Amino acid sequence: MSKQAATATTMTTKLMSSSRSRKRSRQYVGLLYISPWLIGFLVLTLFPFIMSFYYSFTDYSMIKAPAFVGLANYIDIFTKNPDFANSLKVTFLYVLMAVPGKLLFALLMALALNIGIRGIGVFRTIYYIPSILGGSIAVSVLWRFLFTREGLVNTLLGYVSLGPVDWLGSPKLALFTISLLPIWEFGSSMVLFLAGLKQVPKELYEAARVDGASRVRTFFRVTLPLLSPVILFNLIMQMINAFQQFTAAFVITGGGPVKSTNLYGLLMYENAFHYFKMGYASALSWILFIIIMAFTFVLFRTSDRWTHYEDGGDGR
Amino acid sequence: MTAGRSWPATLFLSLFGLAFIYPLLWLVAASLKPNADVFTTIGLIPSHIEWSSYKQGWVGIGRVTFTQFFLNTVKLVVPVVALTALSSAVVAYGFARFRFPLKKTLFSLMIATLMLPDAVIMIPRYILYRNFGWLNSYWPFYIPALLAVHAFFIFLLVQFFRGIPRELDEAAEIDGCGSFRTLTRVLLPLCVPALISVCIFQFIWTWNEFFNTLIYINSVSKFPVALGLRMVLDNEGAVNWNQVLAMCVVTIVPCVAVFFAAQKHFVEGIATTGLKG
Image 1 (cartoon, each protein chain N blue to C red):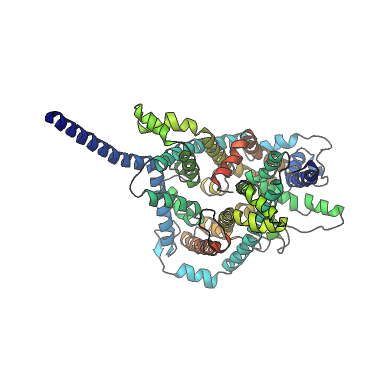
Image 2 (tube, one colour; image 1 turned 120 degrees about the vertical axis):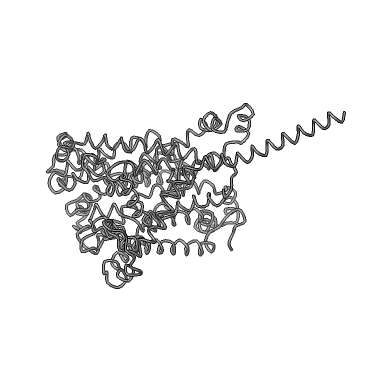
């Protein structure tokens, strides 16, 4: 009997230790599966991230090794480069027009689609199409044709005896015309808002109606707060993208007229890939990075005042 | 909603939708119009259909035709899409189903890269690829795809894996499946809708990719359609408008076709992850 018990005990310990070692090997299995990403992250993200910080303190044209110059690039950018101030201004204006414009449109159309009409799928598809063409150059070319002096938009305005407006030729208007492009591509944000709206519990609307709340009040007190996390998320992602916009301005106006659409992305591109001033361009990229981080940080920090989370994370 | 209340809304949405889609319809129509009519008529019906714009536009620039640009694009896009789906699925499996040291930290880092502006790593990446001798090749597109650099896709698939009951994996393991066979035989077949989303997104993004092709590819014989179109624009943009527009249509068609073929997955894909726009 006791022998049997002893055997049983050794069996159990053997089993346990083997399952423990299997567990340990399982740990490495997990690491093995994520290893492609891990290598990619270290080599293609983290290493470049650190290097661009280092390059930003160097003079580097890729012909000779980078030469350390301290803060010279930054000092030059802030004190001697009028293009920097201009690009910064233009980019801020662009972000301020494109991002709220796009989100507002997306939100309004999502609300309109959410009232329960028939054929919602068709409308969703139609509004979505422009955004799948997103950064494609074909759409930028199209924009150039639509807003040129003899273009479709001016022809239409002509029918109601307006214009012609110099959409792309006037330094005052060109940036506005370019920021209409991302607004036209509001579909992807709209789809996210629609998904968010579907999550709002019907009982809340019922309750609001029973309490005699008006539609406007219901929107501001029920719909908007429940949608606020989706709005915050969209706002941040769209802002990050908009700060780095390149293709539209590059193809539609090439930065002109008189640098009125010379977005920050174009300024960086010019310094890095025309003049091959890699150190200087890295400094520019770090300034942009810090600006984007600052905006993201502020949005996150202030968001607990205006976003609402269902699961007790309510920040009021 | 009652039918009486919803028809004005339907009307409004239809008119609005028409206005939004009109530029694209105009693009197709204008590409078929005689060149002189491109700007003088705004209707959608051409006075007579002029296919020559497509023929002449297709010839491209110099000795490189759009046939070549298309082949190049396929050579660029297909491996990128396949590698992305493969690597993202494997990595997502690791994050969704295994415990390992620093998992939480690594997962947070992965999510953080979603918000890292590309601008800040673009220059050192370029220098790195240049040192590898990868300029003017498609390696700067293949290798990041192989290494699952697009965290968005990993995240999308992790979310999807989490929705699949673990009992399925455990059953497979009891039946003697190794972890890799569990992935390929049990989980991946269930993930097909999510994998389709990944492929479509990556197809459309890579197809439309402009900036990276602009900096990495510099010989015309290796240009994808995006760069080919830009060249046509620079050469013919001032004169043969209908040719430029025809080539715009040609580059857009594959994306729109893919979108329509799989739009259900596409729209649901973004809606379920709540990401990207």
